[in-house]
Image (cartoon, rainbow over all chains, first blue to last red):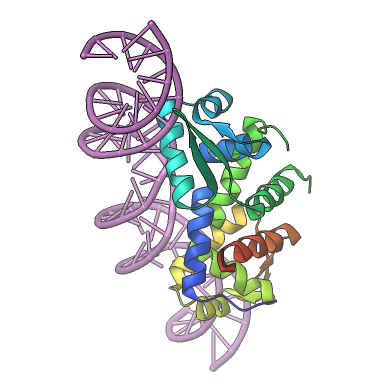
Length: 99
Length: 99
DNA sequence: TTGTAATATGAATAAATGTTCATATAATAA
DNA sequence: TTATTATATGAACATTTATTCATATTACAA
């Protein structure tokens, strides 16, 4: 097994996990994982307020967990990369697996 | 891709990620991942105060991310299971990989 | 018993943060 | 232009939480 990573890496890991550790953001990640979606579609599917979803989308954007593009008046979000998928799968497996 | 999991599962995922998203706890997980260690060994390796390490170990215990046993006056901690290893690896890969 | 080493814990504080509310911006339609 | 829809944002509040300090507990040695 590896030694404790350098502080710089630990801090980045902490940041990523912090961004992932919120129920609203987790739901958003699942919503856009299925296929890319507009903000209003995400709002419906997640069941949170437009303001809250928009706020959390900015946090996901800053952390590079989602990509986005504008299309007319809409903004379409999608998952950033495959690591986010793997993260969701690992965490899901852990919490749904009976000991 | 899967739909958004039920709230109960999302909440458990949030809890697990919350526990993982702290630099002190991340360092502790790395320390005991190499091999099982006593609290005082963890304190030295992590470089945090005894009190802080002990507090964070209780949080890791409650979340079942570490196992422990008593040996004389010492308490020996180890990683709980393979999912924790995978979580560390996925997050490490994400933050160390150049885009 | 007394002393010491290892670990745990309660209180207190400072900082971070999720959510709501109100409002602003941008693009399109009429 | 005005109106409407989609999205973003700033302020404010309440709650959570990481850390420190002091102290308690536990096990063993002398």
